[in-house]
Length: 359
Image 1 (tube, rainbow, N blue to C red):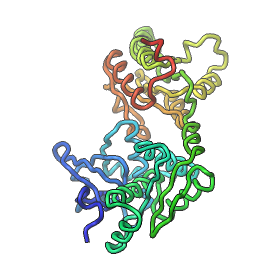
Image 2 (image 1 turned 135 degrees about the vertical axis):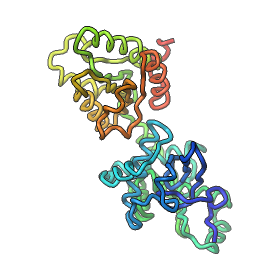
Image 3 (image 1 turned 135 degrees about the horizontal axis):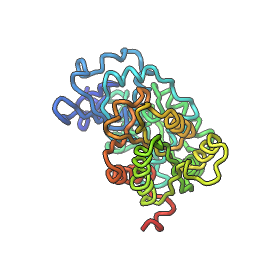
Image 4 (image 1 turned 120 degrees about the vertical axis):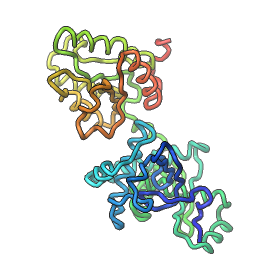
């Protein structure tokens, strides 16, 4: 019996084995569009065995869920991401998200999904394991054919965004959102449900944006250690980073240029806490990577403050293993960094409160 999504997704997802659309992207690279992963991703065909990643055990859905989370998070930074065997291995070593983070991610997904239609839109979430006669019954009694197909896709995507391995986990998280009055369950039918995000749910999502009204962008970077390198990095900041931040409606803060700084470590922590986002440039001198940049970027991420990364193109190979999977703007000139940084800020953060002053 063909799957309900078979018309649109005729292949299988290499991670979950669920319906997907797999197409040629570039040479031996395939593009996978899989509702169960929620975002498209790339994979080299040589990484697959019979169309599946061979280094994921058949019964290890937690591994699949963690890998799905990594792909979703990566896509927010860099769009299409190439999923390699090394990336699959990294996912296995990750910790599962805390329940609070999973409910917040699920709520954010439901808000975005409803806003694709109308605020207050009733979202239908149906599992995909119904038998064909039950599908017809469900269609006849509750939903049109198109609505039912969309409800199955929504179920897959909700599982992905909430790092859920099973429908029971997803149901529990939706129940927690309902108990907190962030979601209203409208109907429960057969094996699915429909729900609406409440006013409190929309407010909660907006409140979860850290420092949403801040106009400050903290800049973590090497300042140079001799006349030549100091001049190079000052030029990068003045004509690349600071200009891009200003053009997108924010104010850049480089801690060594702030007046009246006494205890610089305390000041760094305080200013990161005040910032809307952080820019981390990993370019370094002959003495190697700058530990401070790694620390400041990690501290911001721990506070859910977005981090935008960059590095001079000839030093990308020096990046620490832990951050290589993240997207980095690679630059050769300050002007190149300025343009790409502007695009990245607009795409990830949006224009800031001082955008009128920049024009």
